[in-house]
Image 1 (tube, rainbow, N blue to C red):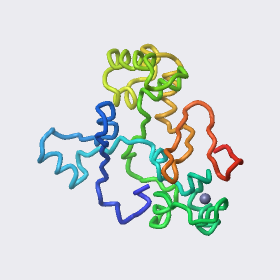
Image 2 (cartoon, rainbow, N blue to C red):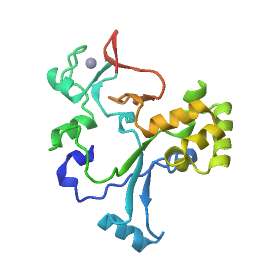
Image 3 (cartoon, protein in one colour):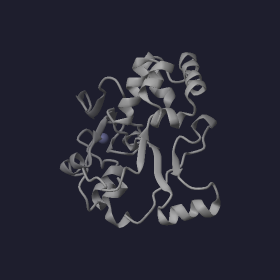
Image 4 (cartoon, helix red, strand yellow):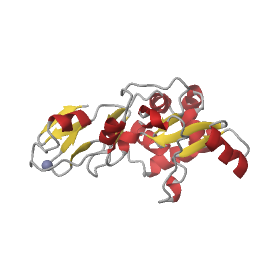
Length: 221
Ligand SMILES: [Zn+2]
């Protein structure tokens, strides 16, 4: 999203977690290929040399990614909002405009713009949420917790499992479905209903989800 604005080309973008709870520490991260020292790390941030990018959530999960009205079940892309003249088709009041809309306004590059440089961000879904989808129970359940800690024991830390571990090893330590799910997340082959007007976005690996547009009418996204 940031790279669509060419004025930011010389800026090193970093990504940091909130610190709400221990299990969520480090869910977003910066990747340094330097010594772990103040001088080396600030040097990498200033020059980009030794800074390999960021690990992040899918931005669509944010509560204000798209535009809309939560109470009216209206979720619009920036283009749809403009077509409706910034007014909610249900209640007639002004729509809450989200982050993507601002990006669209500022951008001097097309949506499908890709950097020539190698990818400098990695989008992830937390491992407990991925496991949860493969076995069909909640991410905070005991069953998910057991598989999660087993995988950490067998394969190492969560970032490694999500980004680097060979799929065959994940299949061996977990299941075929889990290996399939991790590789789909790596390829960004996930279904996303963007967040809007304070409503979190929803991400599913298997199966489609509906994005609400107008009350009573849902369309597959
Ligand atoms: Zn409304």
